[in-house]
Image 1 (cartoon, rainbow, N blue to C red):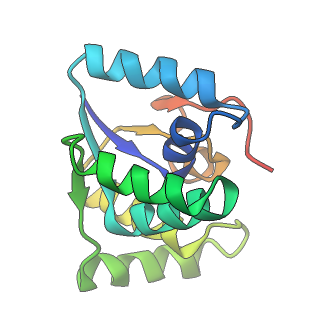
Image 2: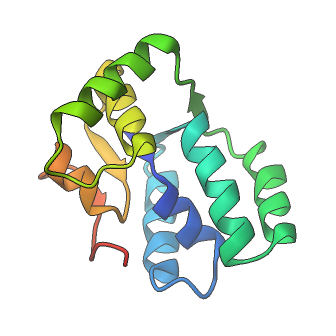
Image 3: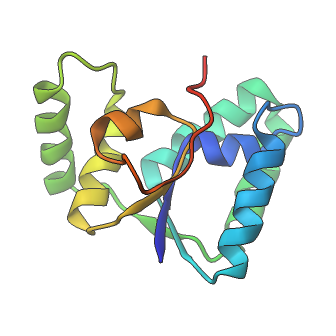
Length: 141
């Protein structure tokens, strides 16, 4: 099983005060136990470092960066072609509040034919993940 990790999953894992911290830890442990291949993107990581910096602390963001390099999570790069697809998605879904980072994630997920995502973002459900969203309790406020 290949699973794309979104910013919300990383933030919940890194922030002990996050409302989804326990759920995220449990799901992450299950994914590791199942030997799932975990993937994310360079833009998701950039967004994650920034959110941890402002929601937790600069030190926590730096520690997350250092630990991430040892996780074995594969980082998919947003290429020019992926960015073009993301722009198409962003333009097409004017009725949704997808961020551009969300759209790059969707483009990567489609390109790599991934069927699972670990996210707390309702946008993943709106875009494509009806049955294969690993965890989605509620949309973040």
